[in-house]
Length: 202
Image (cartoon, rainbow, N blue to C red; front, side, top):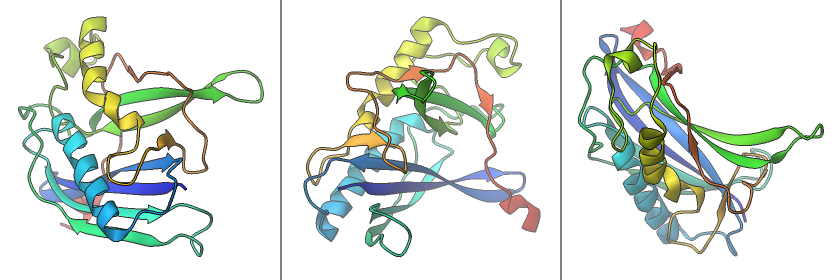
């Protein structure tokens, strides 16, 4: 059984309040979660994201659905209003569209090239022990391997389904499964990643 999870947050961006989400797919659950189990999974997934976001990021909504086919076949299982913020110290000088990139090995393509599952986080601060130095902010330099390893330590739990309805493994939307035993890799640089355009209506 495959499920999708979306955790939606908001942050001040360009004189407006911008919502953005991280979406995850987990496969291998023995059964479709009940609403109560879905609520537990959402709470646990939100708890995993808290140390990946700064105090400037507010959690607002969680959704969990069955991901078994096309839209007509999928079913919303649980929806919850969320509250609270991340726990990272906010970095007010960091562009909100500069994001952390993590990737997890997911086999190879038809030509034998590595394939990865990727997750972007608009953390608005430093993950783990990494330092947002002037070199990082100006994009002249990258994180040390030790800083990247520290960030991966915060990220690692997201490779498996949050507790609440049995075990499952992170996959793509279409079911490509992460390679057994693979570990997250943190990109050496902050990358530009579009946050959204709600500011256009302000």
